[in-house]
Image (cartoon, rainbow, N blue to C red; front, side):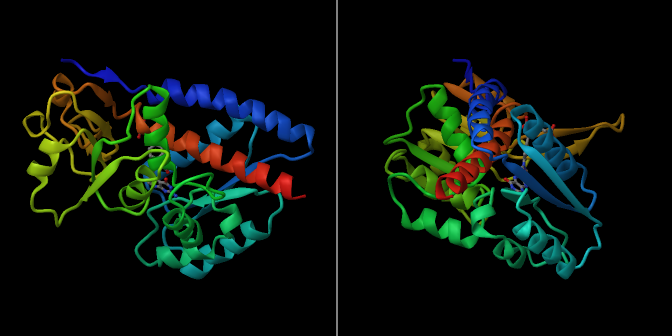
Length: 294
Ligand SMILES: Nc1nc2c(c(=O)[nH]1)N[C@@H](CN(C=O)c1ccc(C(=O)N[C@@H](CCC(=O)O)C(=O)O)cc1)CN2
């Protein structure tokens, strides 16, 4: 068996087309969505992701607001920018790019974001709403990567209901919220969340119908650990520099897994573009909610 591709790039392009129409409809009502980003430091990966988010905004007609601070910025300087974006009417939603430098209390910064402008769905109030709401329309943003995984599978006709999903990694942007998103009634998967303290990963992977690998450990999932017909979403990012000095991203999944999988989301080109487009969807939805409340 050779896996069929869960094409995140093409799917994200389709969703952008749909969002462009919704942004035009908002413009007719006098509303322009604006995405703000707060980037602290000079991490090359974060710079690339933030630049990508603003490129996406330009493509669908969302205004971009970019705020940058140096790597040695204090927590207070970052909180000041957060307060300014909370007050800025042109900014209808924004994100603080993670990770933040070590001197900064990430939780404190996320908690300072106005929940109504939290485009990442990572404010404790929005995560709390996700915990509390098992089904139905959720009136708050979903964390972008878990939402992107579900949407990528849905748009390829891959059913998750009744499937055993093993998520590897317990980070706040992917692993922890993934369990909540995947177990909502409209998705209806059964989830096991594995992490560095998990002692029976081999046993879990052998029984997994779907694997979402978000550990950041290069090629850790091997073909001999998975069953035939498994569905694999590789979300891991390990940056390696080759002997020629060029850097590239390695995912968590050994490419040889494709020989056993039914479906595989490549990395790059799978969940990454979906993460970005779900962010745009959150911004448009927040602007639509604000327009409806006027
Ligand atoms: N505030 C947030 N910070 C971070 C999040 C997040 O959701 N919110 N997630 C990750 C990084 N991330 C989004 O910010 C992200 C990761 C990957 C991609 C992407 O498009 N990747 C490309 C490859 C790009 C490359 O070559 O490096 C792909 O997979 O095709 C977009 C966004 C951590 N921080």
